[in-house]
Amino acid sequence: MGSFGRPSGRATAVVLALAEQPATWRYGYELCERLDLAAGALYKALMRLADRGLLETAWERDLPAGRPPRHLYRLTGPGRALAAELAAGPPVRPTPARVVGGVGRRPRPEGT
Amino acid sequence: VNRTRAIGRLGGLAASTAAAAPFAFLWVQMMSNADDPLTARARLDMAIWMAVFGTPWMLAAWLLWRAWWRRAGARLATLDGQGWLLAAAAATLPGDRRDWGTAMAAELAQVPGGAPRWRFAAGCARAAVFPPRGTRAAVGVTGALAATATTATALATGAALPAGRVFALTFVGLLGGLATLTVARSRRVRRAGPGPAVAGLALAGIAGCVAFTAYYLAEYPSTHRGHPPTTAATLPPVTAVVLAVVLAGCLWLALTPPRWLVGDRHGRRFGVGMALALVAGFVATSRLALRGVDLVDGGMMSYLLFAAPVMVLAGSAAAGAAGRSFRAGLWACAWATVLGAPLLIVAWLAEAPRWYRQVGGLLLDADGGVGMGANLGDAIWWTLVVLVLWALPLGVLGAAAGSARARRRRARERADLAPTA
Image 1 (tube, chains in turn purple, red):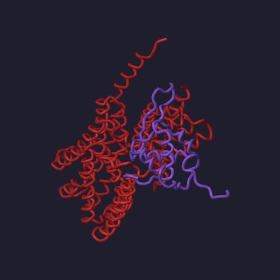
Image 2: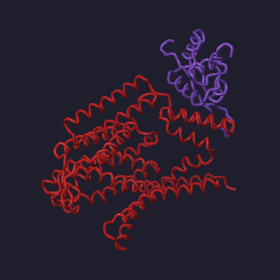
Image 3: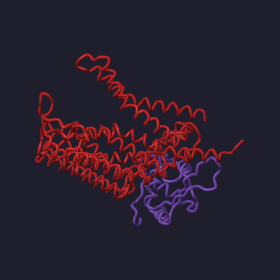
Image 4: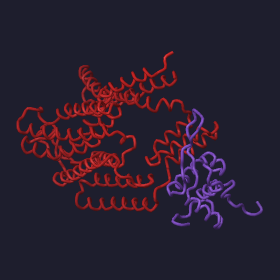
């Protein structure tokens, strides 16, 4: 994990989602919808990742008139390295929250 | 546009009414609590005094509302409930996370209406009000240090200075709590924002206040005053808590000021200048009065009631004119209050023994037959009354007057640039 501690289940889900297309800028609501995360949980995870230098942020350009520019996110080099380690490592243990959807899905007990 | 104007006018009226309400309440209280039935003349006199103190507050409240409404309110009027919720929550974000509030607001604009918008806004508001903690170890260490310091203060003052226990406990506890909150909410602990002059002056004033308070409480733990004289604690619990809250608040504002308070260099410079001028004027007037120069009638009350507010009024007007903005004058007034309050208390407590030796009475009004320790309560309450209740609204009026010319010029320029039909 390098110099970074193991991120929480939500942060891990965000890192892995961003790592699917690492060169693409993503925006907050898109990640909320994709990961089915509450906005509060997503933004806390994004803030933590940015604090640790794992996330690169930018403001949207070339936007239609009248719409405020959105904040865009993608992984930095260390972020991508972390994503690779997380993807290769043992399954992520999600935090007991709404981490369902494509990444970081809570494993259901067999027979349910 | 009409709706925005209507809300703006209604808000101005509400702000003025809210500013007048405490004075009206105070007048009603005084009328109903009077020992003897008051004459119509006495009621009118009290009403005039309330109007004298209340009118500047009403005008100041209206000016502050108008300035805020022009700057941010008109934009907020276009927001829906979810936008208001998010804007209010984002305003509490620490300075180094300010962009996140803008990011959340921009994202909210893309969320379709109804329940999803409320869910998104509520989630973002939660993240804004409770952003991720700073380094958990640092938060833990700061919290542990704060608890240790508060406990040590309780033990030390209990043994060495029982009369100062309430003040010391409240002050150290508040500082510890504020320090822990700062570390917990910020990504990193910032340097003092407003610069070394402001931070140094605030630290000097607060350290002086604490030292003089300890000295007075050690020398005069109880004092006598009143007619007939009664003996009471020099620093009653309510006054002790007020002093602790004021000093901790001043230190908090000077070392980690909110982002809206540090933007204007004219405001800071004039604020520092006004605080120094207030104290220098206080000391010079006191010394001259003690040498027999007929500057003040009796004690220093007339300096506090007339000279100090005029200095704040003039200083804020000068800052507004120099910075060519209402904000510059406003911040100058705010810094003068934050820095001037502790320094004025220090100057008061330093000068009071001279008055007691030479005049045989208190510094405030040269009243004799009262214990020396009574100066401590006078210094605290009168400084607050003069600076906060009296000088602060006058400073707001000064800021508006000083910046009026610049605002008129900007309005003319906007009118010239506007497309003609």
